[in-house]
Length: 275
Image (tube, rainbow, N blue to C red; front, side, top):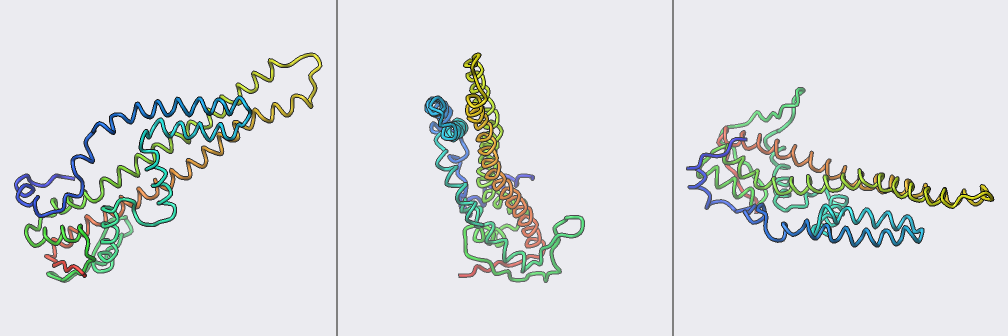
């Protein structure tokens, strides 16, 4: 998407709410130290998992190992990931307020502008009356777009403003999905490693008088590690899929909203904020 002209952006920047500050996008001391914290946390949890593995508490060991991998990739953001995952399972709203404004604003726009997709998947709208009044809910995004249409009805700058309400939530969903996919991919391998270690110990204890009754429980315990690894991988994969679905919904909403902005500008629509 093309950026707005510098002149228009500089003249109108004071009119709009700063939805995404530079501090939230720049690398600061806290985010730079997350890698060290992730490594330290991973090492500590890995040792704890090894203790449970030696004592044959395989399920607990595998759960702790999965948490260790999450700490490794998220660092101090682990609590935020858990909270976000819980939220998207029990709410249809986006977890970032700015993205929720876009979602709430698009609902009446779909109805008023008669937005739909044709057989080829292109977003269509109308027919509309030029200069029509569009009543939208009161939120920062609507007020920003209202001010833009009154002062400087520029489509590119309107899309730029909408993008600020979209990008932070998009990054959150994308990063969260990537972290969970990483753990889902790694857990079966850790389960296999644990199983191989158990089998090596079992075969080293073989002797001339070893019976099936002696081998079966040890073999079953070793294979449990692979089972637990696969089950945990499935759990993380399911959570990651929810982020992927929410990410696709967000992308679709943003595309539709940009089309709605184009329609509003072309038809010189007047936005009225509902109290």
